[in-house]
Amino acid sequence: MPDTDTKADQKWPQRLWILRHGQSAGNVARDAAEAAGAPLIDIADRDVDVPLSALGERQARAVGQWFGALPEEEKPTVILVSPYTRARMTAQSILELGVSDPEDVSLHVDERLREKEFGILDRLTRHGIMQKFPELSEQRAHVGKFYFRPPGGESWCDVILRLRSVLDTIIREHRGENVLVVAHQVIVNCFRYLLERMDEQTILDVDRMGDVPNCSITSYEFDPLLGRRGKLALNLVNFVVPLEEAGAPVTSEPDAQVAPKS
Image 1 (tube, rainbow, N blue to C red):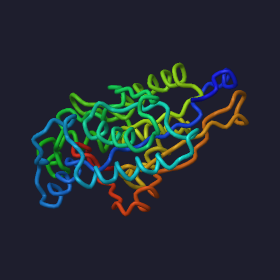
Image 2 (cartoon, rainbow, N blue to C red; image 1 turned 120 degrees about the horizontal axis):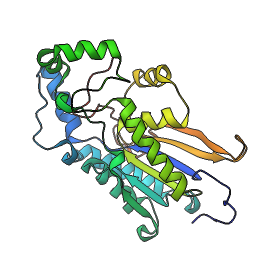
Image 3 (cartoon, rainbow, N blue to C red; image 1 turned 30 degrees about the vertical axis):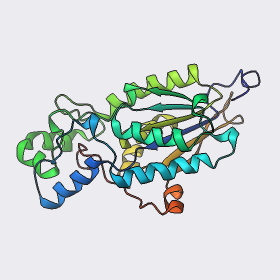
C-alpha cells in the first residue's frame, strides 16, 4: 500500500490504468449483423447483461496474468468497474490473477463508468439507423458525434460530465494509490480527453484512428516534476502486449449498441 505520509501533498493516484473489457457476445453479434446487412443486432440480453465471449474470457485472463507479473508495489490497490457484466467479468479475472491478495484490493462498482447510452438507437446497425431514423442520421452528421444526443441517450459530452465526477472521487479518495478502471471504449477515450486536456477535434481524431482494442491498457503515472504539484503523465496507449504474449487474439470491435463512426 502507498505511504500516505510521503504522498500527503500528492493530488493524483500514483498509477492509473484504464482498461476496456474483453470481447463480449455483443461484439460478435454486432459483427454478424453488419456483415449480413441486417437492421438489428440479434442479441436478447439487455446491454448491461451481455457477458464476455469465450475469447473475451481468454483476453481477460491474459491481462490478469500481466498485472500479476508486475512488482508488488506496482499492482492495483483499487479497482473501479462499470456495472455491466462484461466489465465486471474482466475485473474479476484481474482480481483473481493480477493481485497477490484480493482482500487487500478495494473493488467498487460505479454506475458512472457505464457504457454510453444510445437510447432509441440501441442495437441498430448502420443500415438500421439509416432505414428507421434517417432524420437522426442526418442530424448526427450535422452536429457531430461529440455533441449529438439521440433521444433517450447520451452525447460524448454527457459521458465526459459524469467522468469529471469520477475523477473528483479518485482525487479525493485514492490519491497515491494504484487505480485500475475497467469499463468501455467510449469511457477510455473520454478519460483521455479529460486527462490529456484535449479538445473536440483532437479526441475525434483519436477515435477516428480506430477502435480501442478489447482488454487493451491505457495508463498514466504520476510525475512530481510536472506542473506545480505534479501530474499524471501518459505512459501506455491501447497497450495489447499482454494479449500477444499470451497468444490471445487482439480484437477491436465496437460494442453491440455503438453507432457507426463519422
